[in-house]
Picture 1 (cartoon, rainbow, N blue to C red):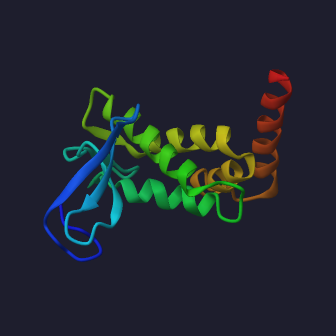
Picture 2 (picture 1 turned 45 degrees about the vertical axis):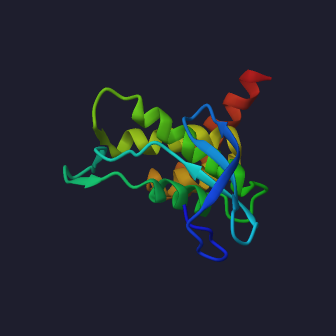
Length: 154
């Protein structure tokens, strides 16, 4: 592991923590400049593919999920840590699937499920693009379904 500050090759691990999603957080210290930094390790997801609506198959890309969440949560009271945790949890669910070729619809639904719990406005933003709302009535139906669910849980 190279030090991000001085690029020295030797670092020591001060602390290691495992998360529920299978990620490993390591606190490190450079043996030359003695600066500390954190690294994250996550299980490689190579081998996962996404089957698009038109049938084309693309390699799975974690960044697309993160970017979708970031765009939906823009200017909302959502922290970067909450977004990263959401991406980790979605990816963990994808890894637990029996298949390695995953329909894009499954990924979209998992993102919507996560956003619905995280922030209702972000959920509506994402749903409007994901479900291709073309008129006000589509928005109203989704908002009504969202508020009806909140009322029934109260």
